[in-house]
Length: 247
Image (cartoon, rainbow, N blue to C red):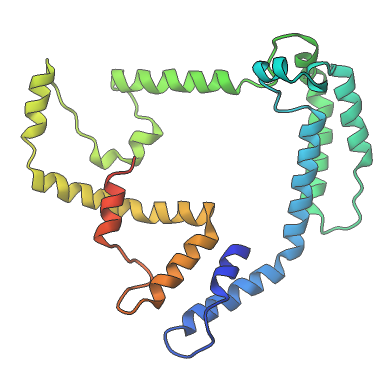
């Protein structure tokens, strides 16, 4: 929101075509002022979450980095981690009812440490035991997606996103498959690809807005300032071509 507000501030105060953008800028500034306390609370909770990760020495260093740069993480024990977490819990101090994010973080940490704390410490005392199962879950997911593709069972999320563009070919050789693909009219293929690209533009816009809001808003304001160019819903041939050649 701060990046969006920064991108809208340069718009001059003038009636006419800039009235909507100035109104939008005032609304964004009001939302920022109203939620500043909540944002500061969330930022503090995020910093405390980083302290928790530091106490847990998570994520662990890769084995190659531990060999080249040995440090304290390679020698830490479960008892040391338990003492650090308990010390951190005791150091939490809340001085107001508006610190809801920090209070929830503390309550969640106390509850989970009481229920699962001892089970989390084995990875520090048993050599080779990982701190999480993310790599194993990733491998299982890779195998599941591959198995679904070759078996024709329920599609994965990626196939569901582009389900309207899936085509099933049955061929006994590459040459036969090539002939079937060539039988599709190029004009019809281009038309369906452009429809798919236009359908993907809103999702890609939200993706850019999430990852780089300032640059995205500045680009929209620049489009609005260019005579004869629409500000919202502008789909140029160049944009279509760019989407056609993306994953």
